[in-house]
Image 1 (spheres, rainbow, N blue to C red):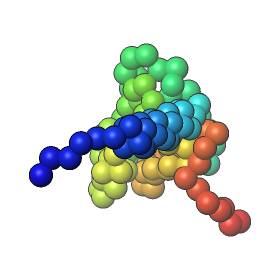
Image 2 (cartoon, one colour):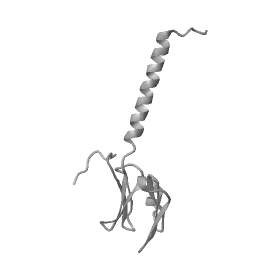
Image 3 (cartoon, rainbow, N blue to C red):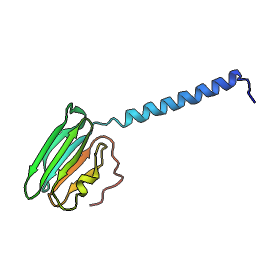
Image 4 (cartoon, rainbow, N blue to C red):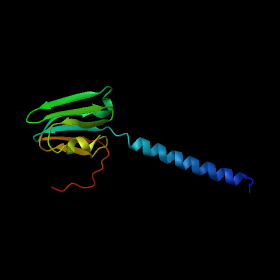
Length: 125
């Protein structure tokens, strides 16, 4: 049942491992874009956060017709709490990649991630 490895077998295995490692390195490097979170309230950008520059947790609170708490950590941001009725914004979860967006429609706040890479294929106006 056991077979003896030959030099060619070892070379092929080493080549496969090297290709896999190179692909992993390329993937990890390309996903490290400089992502910037835009917080937009009633159509105007009220705050910009470079997500990779955040070293400790940041909490941003908006009190208007709805109380909203936005949390940002290194590389990600989310709606943490909101007293809006549907809670879609809170259930959206963490945003970290360029092109991702979350909105609290009743509160009039949108979080949009911008950066070098984008998950958005096309935008029609």
